[in-house]
Image (tube, rainbow, N blue to C red; front, side):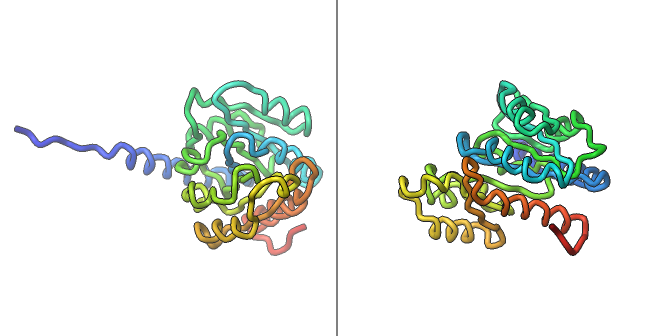
Length: 228
């Protein structure tokens, strides 16, 4: 009897995606486009945070947005109406994440001629999006106060792959059992290099710090020493 052949499909898929992601990253680098991958659970405030941040940055740099969702074009329309920057909606066909090839298709739908920053608003999910390299230069995620300060312990991969964690909805901190300092400690436990910025997308608290972080990352990525 022949031996049964075992194929490690998951490993193969990830390795292929990693190669695609590296190619996309290099291509975007050549075009001078910094891709930021923004992840979170549903309802954390991704779109509202983006609107506030884009409006704080759009007079300084060229910005485009890719909105990923299982269905609908609600977020893309909302971004365009509130900011005026070019936005495309990506339908994942039921998949709970974006990979590098799907991101490439979104990038192909953008006019990159005057774009310095492309933002990918990933599918709302704390598990699958963290597993796939999208080709982004940096990963950022939003954790909202109502979700609880223990999420870095429950979803370790998401926090380990992120360069920045935004803690949103600080305006309701007094109404929830959320320990900000303990949350920061848990984030550092998963990723000592991750930065943490408390924000409130509704009131605008901390958005200036997030915008400044983005500008800094773009200029470091370009090899420049100074940033606004």
